[in-house]
Image (cartoon, rainbow, N blue to C red):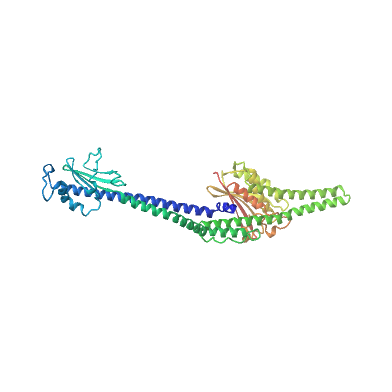
Length: 478
């Protein structure tokens, strides 16, 4: 059970739920703190405003009467100074609940106190210099809460109106109690909401996982559903399907290689074995042994050629080729290649000729590696070209920054439906599936790999029954 829970805590579903609930709870706490602070500020400002207005009203009532309390004489109507003051300020205080404590002084003599201040006196801080001020006063006997006071000094009348902050404290305490009750509820809702959201959002991931688990080497043509969506899951499905396509292509290449390589390697090995067995069965003349050895040598060369191509392509695939780039005069370079290429066409009486349409053009290439690519094209042109016809190697500018190297032959050509596959690894046309001309379909793939290493491109144009033209495009240095 413990291991299962530990494993569950590592899942994205658990982490999503935890993050969602944590963020939801954090937002609730932030909202609570903000509400608490806002309510405190609002209630405090309202109280200060009310006390200030009350103090100003009382001060105006008293000072506007212009009474001289130094010569006050009691009578039947106002036996005391407080009775007189109360009569004056009654209208100002009767309809305002925020005047719990009222204290009025004239020339430092207290002339009026509210009933709850009979035994007490509110002291104005000594630091007060202005005629109006708000200050806090603390007296446990008057109120266990802080008392907020508004002070106004006008025409020798010093008026103090005060109100305990009990209402503010109780309101804030009620708000805190509500949040203390709601917080666990919000947390539970956040967890449930996070679990529901993560389950809904990750359900497609579960579907993708299940579908991926069903894919094997035998059903790589199947697709994972969900490519039609434009969200992150849709992009993930598209990338996974692309990956499956690449795996299928790789497996097809391997299957083709297994078939082609086993056939191509088996044939020369079978010939070698047969001829060796013949040579061992009975004595032969020196001439006969020489013929057997020459035949064996041809088959060994064939095997070597196949293995070298496979090895070279493997190095291209794994980025193990290190080019020794040089600035090369293209015309001079191609002239040397064409001159050496005449040997390829001797058996079919095919000459290789060079046609130049460029002037002072240089390319940055690895001469030996590029020679391998061009020679492959020339060899193919000879193999599939008509006897007694010339092979043309041509240099021409595609644009001011790109030069083309073309190899053209006359022959049966390539069908249009095969042009798109001609550079695929292990692909061979039906006409090439014979031992005299065919290989295992690696030559053109090797050429394309070399051209790509030089940041170039290669295309093919063919008219069936007439001609075929392969063109390598390379960056030019003019």
